Each structure stands twice: as structure tokens, then as C-alpha cells.
Length: 472
Image 1: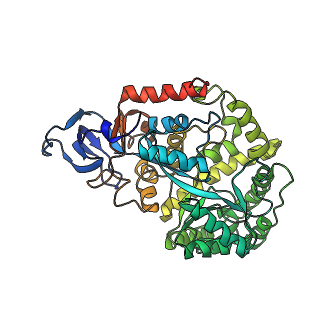
Image 2: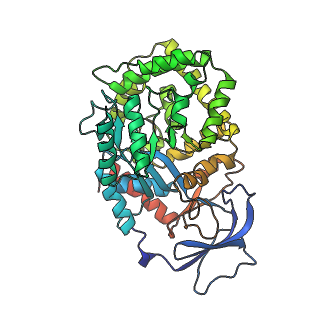
Image 3: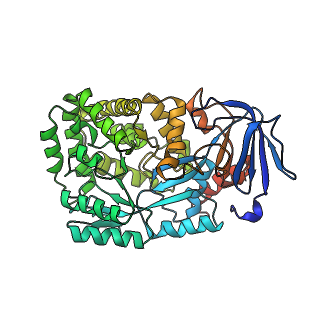
């Protein structure tokens, strides 16, 4: 399967659906959406929009049409080493674009396969290797694409090599020292390249907001120490975090969690509001990745009898158990620690709701492929969690459509259902504005003008199942 031009009719029309265009406008029933050469050329009442000659007409009366979805934080890795595995699951779930947050050469190969039509898959925006301090949090992982940066010269070299390697943006990580962090930002700005990623433990968060970093990922530690009445002490505690010789990330998460627990006890809404105002003023986006925090804070929610496990490789339960126990939980959690984490997740939801109310640009992302997360499927979980945090269904939908397009500089040609936008579309059987969970009720998908009907969507899911079982 591919989205090669031979397989894409020149003129196509979806007729009769209620269009939810993600601009914020009310849903519009009984619409026609015309697609010519992969571009939406007209959207309007079905009775008034003329159809071009030889148009392939698809009757979608009673359905709901939304833009294709974007997962803004993924790591598209698979134990199968077959790119059809995750690509099929993304498309089958209406995910037509992804932002890859850990640059690997293989991802660039896969992107070329998608762009050439050899592989049906989402648009890919690909990060650099992780730029981290020493010891890097993932330094114990064999062949891990992590670059240790400890000086201005190393920062300049790392940014230059990443750009030369085809990275679309620079990914910064948690243990970058203050000098290295500032040097990475300065070099990236000099070269006109965006920086995104974690906050640095060694630089106060208010300063980082205005540093030039364009998005912050996850809710680890960043906001609450800076929103505490004890900010100076807690920010200093973040910078003093020590990583063990083994399981660096697990040790780090455990120590950050302790600081978070102290921070929420001294949380001051006025301080938080000031941070949110800074984020808005600096036009900095935040990707909360609630889906991954849900399993970090509440690992008991991971179910190995989940029906989606049929799409995962046989070794997944073992790898998940290791990651959940040694990385996410940092080893054994006492009953008191487990209860603290359950409460921390409620705080994360409340914080995201407050950020949205303050006008912070939020991006929907999942942090695939962590324990309890499934390619494509988990973006719908993220949308549900955003609504649980207090966002309206429209705002949650925009976090996976309009806002990613704005962030990626695509707002003139992607992210909404409007004339002039690329034909990345999802047709649903039920109304996502009445219940955001209805984004799961996928009837058909259009990827770059290529229509995936129910039968082909079933084939994509079947392909992913076969690959997961080792049957190529």
C-alpha cells in the first residue's frame, strides 16, 4: 500500500458529513469537502458546492469529518524493526502526522519511504539526537543516540552535526548544564533551528521560558518548583539531583518526584499564573504528555490483557515490566509513595487545565513507546485526558490539529478543514464534540489525499498484528 499518485484520484468529494474544521467554528452539518490533487479546494453546504467532472464521490451522511490528528511526542521504535508496524497503526488511528522526539538515522530512511510513496504513513518531523549533560540519563542504553554536551564548543559542534544529519529541530534533555544549555540555544538560534525538549535541571524555569526554547515536554519538575513559595530551594534541589551508575532515568524520576511532592505542598496559584503569562508572552508551547504520566503515576493502570496488546510484539510485556519497575517507578515504591503519585497525577490534570485557561499553547503528545502506550491508539487517550483536565472537546481536538500546525509552521496548509489545506482527514461515526472518546470511532482516513476506507483500515490493523507476531 502507498499513497502514490497512481492510486489517488485527481478529484474526490466527501458529501453529507458534519464538518468540525478545528478552527473553533461550530460544527457544520451536511457539508461537501472537495479534494483535488491532495488539496482541499472547497468546503460548504452539500447542496451548493458544485462537483468537478469525474469526481470520486463518497457519501458520508451521518458521519463527522475532522482534520487528521498529530501526535507531537513519539518515539517510533518497534521490536519488529518493520516500519509498517507503527506506520499502519498511526494511519489506522487517524494519526496523519507525528513529531519524532529522538532522532535516529532509521527514522530518516522511513520518512523517505513515506514521501516516495513506498510506505503509507504519517508526515514525520524528526529531532536531533538527545543533547544531554553528563552523565546522560540514557547513557546506560546500548547504541543510544545521545550526545553529551558539557561546553560551548561541544554545544556548537553538536548542533552543527545534528543539522548536517538532517534533524528538523534540536532536542535538549534534562541534565544539560547551564553553560551548555545556553550555548545550544545560542547556536541553534544562529542557525535558524528550533529547540524543543525537556527543561534543564540546572537553569531556573522562568529563565528557560524566555531562552528561545520553543516547546517544553512533560510535566516533570518544571512548573511546580517554580510555582512554589519555596522556589529558590526547590530549583536548587533540581540542580543537585544525582544519577546512579545504573538506571539513570529511573533514579532521576524518583528524585524529581520527591521534589514535586514538596513543591505541590507549597504551590502558589499566583506564581503559577505568572509562569503561564510568561509562556503565553514568549509564545512557548507545552506538551504535557498526560498519557505517559498516567502510567508513571499510576502504573497499576497498565493491563497486559488489553485487547490492543495484540498489536505489540511478544517481548513487550517483559520490556514494559522492566521500564515500569526500574525506570518509571525507580525501583520499589512504598505504599506512601504510590499514594503520592496518584495525587500528583490529579495535580498534573489541574495544572494543564489552568494552563489552558491562561491561554498557554498546548500540544497533544503521548511519549510513545513507553509502557501502556500503543502507537496511534494512545493519542485518543491523550485527548481524553486533556478533556479530563478541563479542556473542551474542541480545545482538545485543536491540541492535535490546529496547534501542532501552528507550532510546525504549517498553519497555512495544514491543521484544519479549510480550502487550501492538505487533505489529511478523519471521518468518524460519532460526534467528538459531544464525547471526545468518539475520535476512536473511525470510519475512514485520508492521508495526503489517499483515502483509506474501512476495508483497507482493517488490512492495516491486520498487517500490524501479523508483524507483531513475527509473520511478515
